[in-house]
Image (cartoon, rainbow, N blue to C red; front, side, top):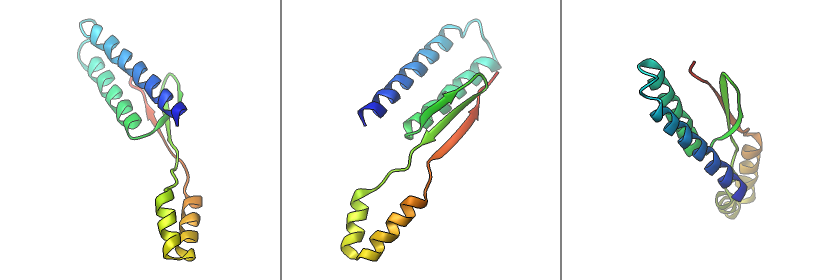
Length: 107
């Protein structure tokens, strides 16, 4: 968990620096390009806040991954209701996969 938080903090620091850089170049880059970069930064920040992690970043694309989470309290509650609901939850969890999203960077 600590590693995930550190990675998230590093990415937030990276995009904070990116937004400061964009703000500094706002006088040079005008119009559509500056707006596109600001929108791109906002999208990336939203995904990071939702729990997604950056898996890869290339020149054209950024790929995010959100790992599935096991809800232990729900599992215990369902086991208390009966073994079958608990087993059904395990089957449901096993059938889930990690979510991944790829967004295209602006030019």
